[in-house]
Image (cartoon, rainbow, N blue to C red; front, top):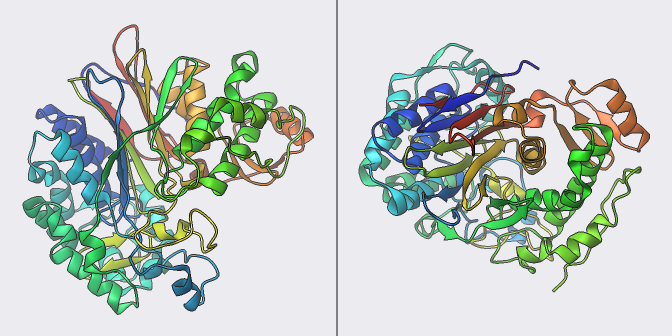
Length: 524
């Protein structure tokens, strides 16, 4: 894999998956805006130039570390299911599990409520100023990136099923090609309305009415009440200390707890004494991942519906019992059950005042549900897909409930101050890659760019684990000797990560952007 040089900055930095969006965030910082405002501007532009991954129709989460604060604040801007959502409704429609696309996979989008909450808490600029770069981009058009064009083309079938989606995101029935100029006039008008009227335009005005009308036409259950009752919540972050570094994540319903569990399970094994990315090292992390994901699938749900507190999942006594089940020389297909005791885009911003924002927003899979509300340009996400239809499961679909979320931004503190922001796109791969990157940085002293460049594993299911092609054959053979079934994977199956860290000796900002994607870090 072609590696990238570390990007450095003195005062501020923005990193994300699209250069034009990164530039928008930097321009906000250069005009005096803070990390939160730059994050919103960056996310809004991403929703224009990478519309299959992120947009107004998705959810968002953020960790905000303000200068001088002892810990970050966590924002949950995930929407809830319709009040009419019940397992019997979906079974009555013939679904044996939650649908992967279509109107019945849609929950209320929470991202705009998240933008509103962030600006109310930390904003110094007008929303219209923050959204101006995205409006300009949607109005005037942008040349489509090569990787973006590839993902867009793969979504032609999904988009063609919905007339409004086809009208907004296909040209003569096809996806735009790399380098082709693409304009989004409907989305530009929607962004202008939100810029002028705020979040109320989305949840209590014309935009909500158009989305509900689209839902009605397709037999969906979304109502104006569902939108009016949407809110973003400031909550306590989930956290664990790893070798003196305080790792902060969003608590459930996100899978941030999975990354914490992986790290804490691995901590006593003295990873520095092992060959980095050698077979013994990878085996320990893969087995830790299996245990962490077993917890996720068994316990994690909307925190208001969980039967155990997230803190109980990473209690040291319980983690010790989980570690005892790890065989150093033998892989297992399924993790042991240990009882409890007692598409997406990520971005990171640091501003000249020392404020940090670790931010993630997503439609889940490419173009989400594949449904666009006519006249809005808004592709609605398909987060409802992650609900269960098992009525005794904590994550079972229910009225006004958050689904399990794959989104997991992180913010790391050292000696009481922000040290690094790390996150990635990639759905279920997010926590296991995030843990690998954090270990690369903490245990092996890598820069964010080197930590992101390093080859990765992606444990899939059972004994199957995908390795990137940069791993030597000897490592693959040694893993197979332990019982792992090594398989191949596509570039996108290993996620697309971004990170910023502060050099504790010099104070310089170090940025890393994934060579597996087409974004960049910019510092000044």
